Length: 465
Image 1 (cartoon, rainbow, N blue to C red):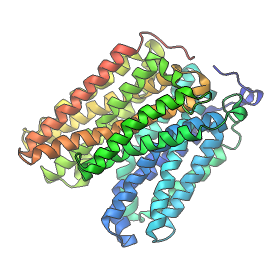
Image 2: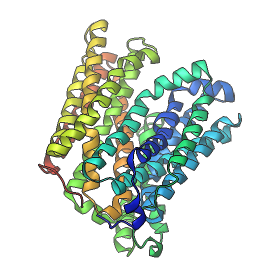
Image 3: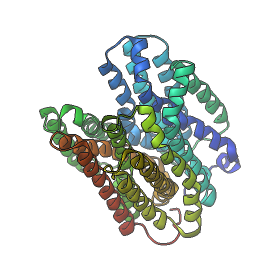
Image 4: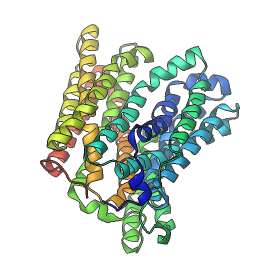
């Protein structure tokens, strides 16, 4: 572990730092993500075409996915507290841009700023937890981080509907600004944390530029491929750019004395397995997206009614986060990282029983989403702690960025894969057959996540590098 400064040694983080971190990440997981559920309200106020609103919806996740590793690397070099504050400021500016006027350009700018804010906040806050908490206290802090992320995104749709209905959708972002200011106040006495010798490190501008091209191409493909068409010339061109940029980036960075991404991070089999398992497990978001599509198209549900069926996903995940943490403390991460995907696979298999009578299917789906939530919650803290334990402390920012980028890309790929399977089949088969096949594909991916953990995660407790 990196040596602490006198200020860091004297600092007692306690609950104040945890509260500050939770409030800061809620600006994305709860408030920025609420935008997905208020699109009609936004369209009405802005008097714009729905296609523009849909662009605004997707921009935040797109910019988060593109810049999160860059921001994690900058956090290691410039300072994790500094990057956290920058993230909060960007979130405040993004919220102001969204609500201050009816100008579409400011709406788009606001959503971009919210994406950049999340990219700064996620790796920097995880790195701060790694810096100021050790052992079981770090694992507990990571559980609270998971509460803020999984809990925030799970409540987002209901929160958005409630505020938009009774107060107006702009109040969502007014509340985000207020909580962001509170978070800044709570961060006021937190000492800086960054990689020793950071002043002497030069920024790898070319490496960052190549990486951004690589991430932009794959993010556009995964988020827009279904809409544009997978054989569309633009999609195929972006695929080619992504593949070429991988090779260019790798060979360019290997020759750099101070590369943007130190590939020694990937020399650890456990870290590679953790990133792979996390990527595969987060494709489960595709199951939630597909269920909402099928429930509304095949069962005639409203979006709200479909959301109520999936509420057990939230309940299960929140209930199991601390359980996963305690098991991690006693026996290590291997069993939770294997059992989580198996539980999710069972849940998806139950949800795939679309041939059952409607009432019975709703009941089984509620049970299925409970299994999905239980598995996700059990997996959450062990995967974060294992990622942090597998890399040196001075590289934890970029490593955190990579692990969270794998979450973002996993979710995007999950949505792309399952919805593509469903839409390609539904033209020639019944919605029931198409949905069942797509759900089974999702369950198979979970089994791949199990295998990744089984092969790479060691038995017993892990010691921090």
